[in-house]
Image (tube, rainbow, N blue to C red; front, top):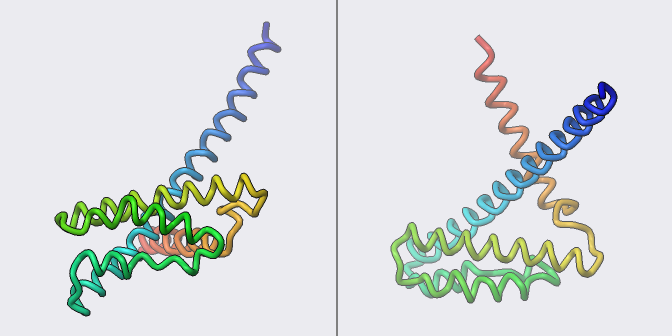
Length: 148
């Protein structure tokens, strides 16, 4: 009986570790999506406010995906389906639709990479650069809070 409970306890620790790893990866992916959405939002604002374009024109111009390589068409499709129809909505809703479009595109790209046997999104320089930068910023902020 003691051995069985020991095995369960050890297995629980491993499962707990996997759960923590999965939660971290989910949170990292969510942060990455939010970061990308904010970049597209900033582009939208520049086109709309500084270049005095309509919201619809600004959304079209902000939806530039040639840099997404072979996944650009996926991104464009999600942008057209989700972000572009939001042009006449209030700003908060436009941002929400931009973020929804980015989330759909990222998840579609992840699935397409898996299906093609391509490197995962998590293995890309862009994603890893985002993680490094974000973790460095968090560590810098944490160390500044602990210093007298």
